[in-house]
Length: 75
Image (cartoon, rainbow, N blue to C red):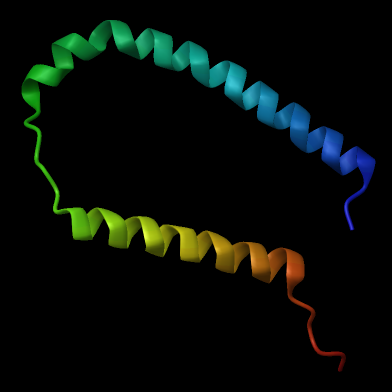
């Protein structure tokens, strides 16, 4: 299903994306103390948080099923 070349390419891309995002976070943290003053914390209801998390996991599962497991009917 997956070739070794595709797997290694995906792993290298993941490492590169992770490494470059760390630099961005480090640069942003220096300015975060100045920007946090402008925003107020709003507490969300627990039911809403759980609902959004379940909906997100369901959509991720649907995408994985669609692209990795779904077999189209032969025409």
